Length: 341
Ligand code: GRG
Image (cartoon, rainbow, N blue to C red):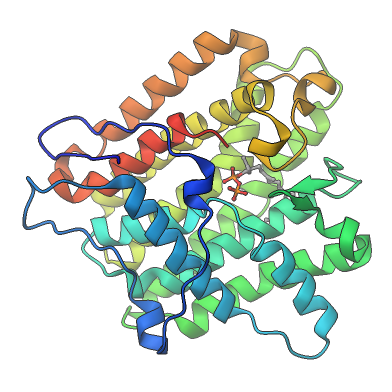
């Protein structure tokens, strides 16, 4: 059992993927669905914080919220395709980060749950499109056939489009107990992170770099700060915005997220080399096969791991001012480097 104490540095052992693959539980009322199981007791800073339990319970609650967010209606095929990928599993790291940052900034999980769901919808959309033959061309994702392999390319493209647009509708219509100007601010931040200034831009430079062996570290950093980092940053910052965090706190949270975003990608590149298809739930070894420039190809595995560890340490130092309230965020940061998928 993982235990984190406020008095010591957050230490995380290996959380096995199966620990995060839990069956959804059923909540009887809408309100219960919105209130997540684990909340930090910030009044008792000495209390132990059980990170693995926290991650499992948050994932469970997010899976339930996502399931109820997207019912199947006419035309059924598109809703089924959207649900196929949205409910296919995944670590739910992005929504977990959003809920944790909202709480860190003094908000509640119920204020942030629609945005947390929307973040997972946008992330899933980006995976569906990334897997298409015109992009990364993969047959497996989250341990299952990719969306286009099941529904065809036309429906997979539309399933992504449906998830992307519904994400914003969901935040705008379902967020409660947050002043409207803050909801608008969160929507604007998330839209920017998803578009050409974020994910889309990162994906474009990634596609442009394909087949090149002279991609610079600067370009690699650009790709991943946008393709992977922008959405992770939006998770943390949107949680803070919804809670009404000050500009100074939002800046700390943003710097924390940018550091863990890059660390996340470095570990992703390492796992592509060291993990199996079963562990990853998608084709392993694709980067090497494609001759792609990655962090391990530039630095080697050991140096890449050292850089990721340093980024996580820098990230955690940004949250010192929050004291024990930051324990879940610190734990999540450590999970990024200790994860096995
Ligand atoms: C968002 C408008 C819009 C377009 C998307 C296709 C595209 C443009 C961008 C690609 C973005 C992409 C696939 C980045 C990779 C990010 C990444 C490391 C994904 C893996 O995340 P995990 O490990 O996956 O959290 P799970 O399955 O656990 O959620």
